[in-house]
Amino acid sequence: MTNLYAHRGASTMCPENTMAAFRQAVREKADGIEIDVQLSKDGEAVVIHDETVDRTTNGTGAVKDLTVMELKKLDAGSWYNEACAGETIPLLEEVLKWIAKTKLTLNIELKTDVEPYPGIEQTVLDAVERHGLEERVILSSFNPDTLRRIRELDHAVSIAVLVWDNVDGVVKMARRLGADAIHARPDFMRTAEAARAAASGLPIRLYTVNEPEDLEGIALSDVDSLFTDAPSRLRKELAAVSVE
Image: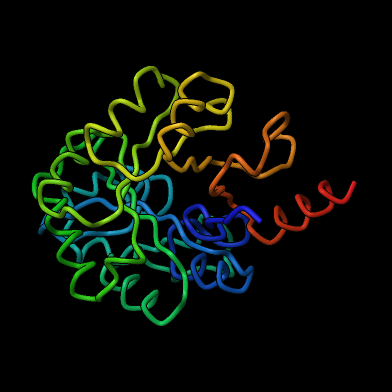
């Protein structure tokens, strides 16, 4: 069956991008986890989706303007429900140390499409190497310059091109960057670029798929992986659809 990556962890059941969501992904038997990484004011890689802390913590302000000490004081769970109060913003180091004890693949999205975060590529690569996870990590980004820098720094680590709606030429760009996969929305499968990707041997991973209906008209055999907020539920529902 197509691999399922827990999108920001199992974020239907737990607050996104927290250790609680990552542990839940293990319980839901996900094949991998997708996380988002940005840099703190003091240059540490931290796991959070937005460029600000406002939506997913009890704090305010830009991630780049807050130190790790300030970020770690924030509550990243209460916004989801009171039972998750006390969850914190994880450091990338924390996640890597934890995931090394599992069999999961880790997709790290470098969030450089808004903030440039100079040096983030080397910071992430160094952390991955320290934990010996080079063969279990995928680095992705919407920013082709970020992917280019990663490939210049490391010729072996797996990288993936992230695309939203402007997919024209993405296969050519992936080849130029030395990328190993394309991450796109389900609609990508209905474009000529999807056929080009398949012909080029580029795996396609689709985000964010939470219902079988999201894949209407798409053959799962053409898709390497799905990113989902609810790995366990989606797996059961896809299995039920295939039986029908």
